[in-house]
Image 1 (cartoon, rainbow, N blue to C red):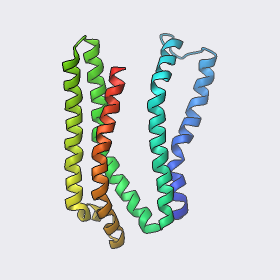
Image 2: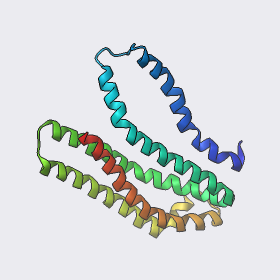
Image 3: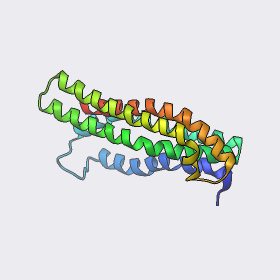
Image 4: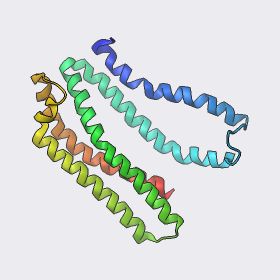
Length: 193
């Protein structure tokens, strides 16, 4: 096993490695204009790249910052690293709901725009998605604040880890509310473009 020192790099390397493995073969094929689907035009691909690059860069920076933070947490020792891993697992699992809402909001906005519906409908879709994300993450924050120790006991029996994580979950819960709003907003942005 890689041990404590190997945890950070092992948890971060898959993202850029996937990009390096996935991208070059496709770029070579695109350069030669041998697209797998004849109904996909170069202009459509250029549009996707132009519109998707800012969002992809944002996700890359966000996951990169999380990876670097994980590496830095490892400098504080095994307890801090274990606490960070558990806290991130819990909060990222809870974030799956706003992530799904982001996709739903994007799809609903695209459908509404395609149907020629006006601004009031678009705003209603956005507000509903944002309020659902705030409600879900707010409820999750309250549960994490109230039951942090009990939640941690599902992951570990080490009292030192439990005390660190339970306190941090209270802080991370509030941060996740903002993360839910950000995720749904990005989904909405995707839908209107």
